[in-house]
Image (cartoon, rainbow, N blue to C red; front, side, top):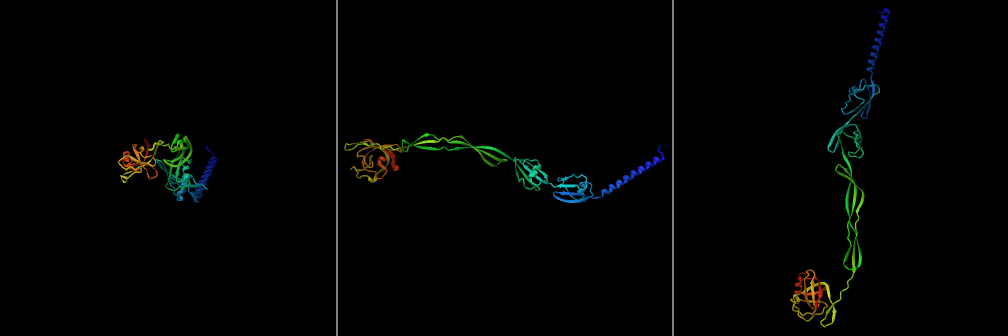
Length: 340
């Protein structure tokens, strides 16, 4: 049992506690109605506001600041407000990333393409070709294309043409040649460093060149020896001895315009006989004429002088020209040899 004095002390304690609680509650209620000054940074737009809101969310509602679901808010929407609180709002925009066969849309507050790719942990070590450029500003709805970059070594073989060395050879007749060493082309290999964006070639750089096979120089001996004319031997009509005669050159023929005329030997020209005109072989000399084009030969008797045109060595009758196939050509290369 409490004494009267004890009961009185208890009552006084209760009254004192109640007073403190009432005073504390009154002070707290008063503080709740006092405004606090906070700083709002809305994507670089900074301003100061006085607010009686209890949380960041209440502040946004009080100040009628709309924040999109994808926007970033620091501190969080449920964070309490206090004097000097800084509220940061980062506005985001949609950006589409395109890779071969894959596309995705992300929201970002990054200022440049490079900042956004770093934010997405996409390597900027040259593994991709990026468009637009890394320092281009990010704009709403932007498409960023990432194309894989490949660097490969490619090889190409090319021919090395051989050279030809000519040597004069006085043991060979002029106009003749002798291949001493046959030429062979060489081979060289080119190595390129080729950069591809996907399947498109971007650059090609020659790295090195190797000789796989050296070319072999062709060596040719060119004849310089001049052949002396072979001596002529025939038996003249007067019986004196001359040297054997053979020659190559152009032959022509003559026919109806001279039919029945007297030749230089005094005989009458007959285009149907096998006769010929020569500049110096004795009259009556029998020679074999071979047309080199057909390989046909005919024996004719020299009974006239000619040909009149330079560069020709014999003028055949029409019959002789027809026999060896010369007539259709008019002029042809022949070989003549003294038979008798």
